[in-house]
Length: 301
Length: 338
Image (tube, rainbow over all chains, first blue to last red; front, side, top):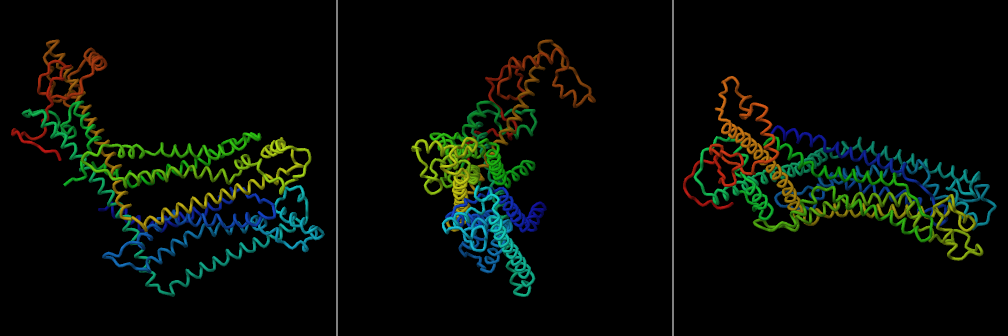
């Protein structure tokens, strides 16, 4: 029982830290993915906005779904939500608590992606360069409307032949990057202030209910783990018994076919037990063939 | 059995994490393979599409099959599927569960290859460079170029060093366009896969959770039973071998005593353990004969009781098997098979 107690304590203390670890890993993966991704703005009027905003918003959705999938507790919560009531009442507060903790953890990686994207600036430059007012920039002020659309769309591509060494391009680029970074830092500040307030003000409201909800959600998680552990243990014992029965039945079948008075042997008792009375090649072959063709029934009573 | 119990618990609790580990390693191997692979677009009109789409679709298929091959449970699934029913019923739900969990794990590395390929963009650029809309992106009114010529020029877009159609279609514009489409496809593919995985995982507890628990338990059981059976057979084989070899040495020793008419040497009490382990073979010639005999004429796979004077070390086929350790029962009772 000591071993089980140690295992339970480990699960209790580490269930939260395992989930926090996964959350942190996903956030790191999100940053790594952004740096590895080769951002390449199409620099075409109709495609820029779609590409820029797509890169900003589609990967966060993917990261959010990954965060939900990788979190074991989401399955536990769904299970608790959908189970028939039976003898045990369902407490919606517990389910709400689990849901909110899962969603909060899953939101970290998408938010990291969006903030990194904004602070880097490429996405916003690509998406909104075509929407700039050409009057504000000297190089684009005296150009026909069709051409200005094309030129503005090419601003994100530094190496384009039209845009090389174009000072107005640099001006537009700097302008958009400034807005992008301002937006990024503002979002970061708002989120941190919100998290800070939520954590500080939470004990002022419903602390007792919160403690209850947290306790029971932990309980449901542990109960699920222990159930799986017990099933494993049980299936191992079941298999062990089943195989022993099988060997015993083989021994008895052999004894039946070779009916002989037993002779005293001087062989080691331990070895005999392990041999289970199966002592020649034909008997072993028969045992293995029977194991395949005629597995014993799942009944060890 | 305690040691076996610990090992089995480790395997059981870690079987899932072991399989997940293999799955993760294959995913990493897939990205590494892609970055190590030297992509070389042929830049010829007829070959580009085949090469590009081939690199996009053939390695995932290989990785998928590899995912099945590396999975130990595939033989377990095949065995359970093909075994005769006998005394134990077969449950198709268990087989379906095993197959689904294996297929899901095998799908991860191919999906990663396809995503990385699309997000990188080289394959789509190579495959579809001849389909770039020259009217909108380039200079379609370029004179004196037949359709075939245009195709040949466009096919060289991925190969910047030999591209000679800058007036027809700027290379960077075409590459940016194709890469944008490729990356959009890539992100959509990843989103689709993730959504599917999420739906599969979250809808399952809403339907047939009890059936799922049953299938999972019995599929783990089949795996454990197979491992335990293999362990028991290995132990049995070890004991069998030990007794067989012991009997071989004893028969050698008996033969020599009979042949040379030497009385068996009486060992003093303090020689003890060591001399018992010598099994009656105490000089070089005897040992050499024993080794030669082991090579030329191995004993039959048939253990007999040492109390019977077999006389000849190679006899034994006619001996009836004896089971001395069970308690003596002299009644002719019929034992029914459990």
